[in-house]
Amino acid sequence: MNRSDPHFGLRPQRPTPEPVGRPSKSSAELQKDELQRKAAEEYARRGINRVYKQELEARQNELQQQGIHPPGELAPDVDKAQLEHYHKSWQEYWQHYYQDYYSGYYDKYFGEVKTKVDEHHKKSTDKLVEMFEDNKKLATQKKRLEDPEAIRRDILNRIVERGKESSFWGKARKHVRALVFAGTAAGLFLFLQFNPVVVGAVKQYLGPAGSASLPSIIEPSSSSEVSKTPSVIIPKIGVKAPVVYDEPSPFNDPVQKAMERGALRYWNTASPGETGNVVILGHSSNNLLNSGDYKYLFVNLKRLEADDIIYLDFEGVRYGYKVTEKQIVPPSEFSHIYPTDVPSVTLITCDPPGTDNNRLYVRAVQISPDPAKNKVVESNQTTEKEVQEVPSAAPSIWGSIF
Image (tube, rainbow, N blue to C red; front, side):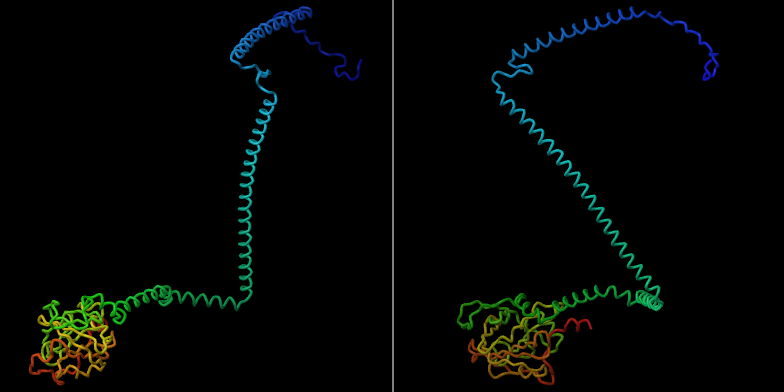
């Protein structure tokens, strides 16, 4: 008895199973079945090969009729070297194609990788800089916290700054730049618009005074037509403007009103064609807000010199005068408006242009027509008691406002 047997030789006997289905065959029968199966497979294979061979031969015959050689055969007119060149060319083509394809792919791939690496490097650098700045701030704050005196100064400075910001001047300080700019622009505008010295010389040529282009002397027998509108013509300075003869007052306000219509023959002085002194007043400057189109009529009167010619058209006759003297005097000096023994004309304006500090007088004597034929009239000249000062320029913009 085997000691290793746990059942001590008393193994239970399993019952033999009964056969199920068809009965088992012997080895001879199985061998015969196998031979029959292989014979059937071989027969089927030969039949299939025969069918495919017939189809292949038919296809080859059809291709030969069309001039196409079957695979593995060379056409009679194809050189073997050409065929090798053909295959080599195709190989090179596909080699370059795949090389370019993968080269572009890897270039793109590594480009994207490089971009990501650069972005990461930049972010890292920025982060390091930020950390460095934070560390500096922390170090500074730590240092200040360790210094009580610095903390006290910082608190005081913050209190003072907040006090300034909350005050009126602290708030207004933010707008100082805009106010300075606006003030400068406004000042420049006022200077250009209301400074008669700047715009006077320009306005004289742009206004109705126009420009005169006459010969220096016009003979009485000249056939040139003379306007019946009373006017003053000064060729040298381009003046041609109407003259008002119907103002009966010597005082400043009515005189200024009359001078809005042109130059003014002053009250109680002679008229052209009479013996005596024809006194003509005209503005040399003015501000742009005042009325009238002749505010800069005599702005260039100072340019007249001896022997220059002045014309006065009056009642259809043109009278010519030659300049003999020019003088600047105070406003209280008005002897130049008194009668003269020789028929003459005196042009008066304020000087320097843009002010009424002085008066500019230009005296000219009559040269045509013959002054001996002038009408003699009884003098009715103004007296010193009646007029204390020659009228001035029109009031400035500041005078008009205040």
